[in-house]
Image (cartoon, rainbow, N blue to C red; front, side, top):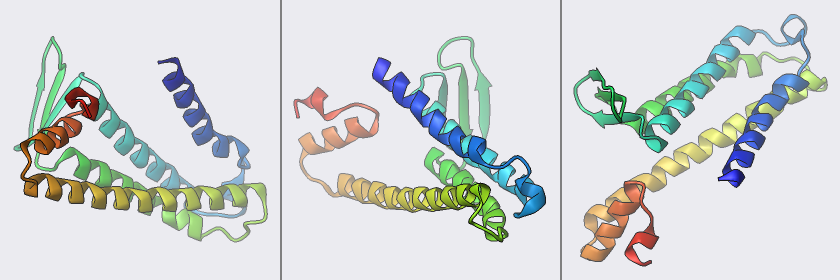
Length: 173
């Protein structure tokens, strides 16, 4: 557990580092649409936090279906239903937030300043994250297709357990 906390702290520091390294008055000198980029960053963060909270904690239960919200005094505290799957909502928010940051990165005139280099690095990292997200979605679709087509009941159970948050070790793999 201690290792996970250290990785989380390091991840937060890496996220905050470019914001600290950038010039305070970058909006006045070079790139426009700073407010739009900030809103885009908030939308990306909301998509990641929503997916992480619902997928990895027992506090919120989410199912695909007609829109419905229920609050409960016991676990799970919040029950949500929406027409889109949780992965679709996550991808929609992350891609929308990324598109909102695009005008800011394009409007930069000079990438030789610390703020310009920081923005260029952030734009590049955002591009890599989106590409890896689309590739992950592609792999997820392939695994789902394989799970539906597989004939061995043992492998079907293993794939079902891994999808539900279990591990292959519970089946002796």
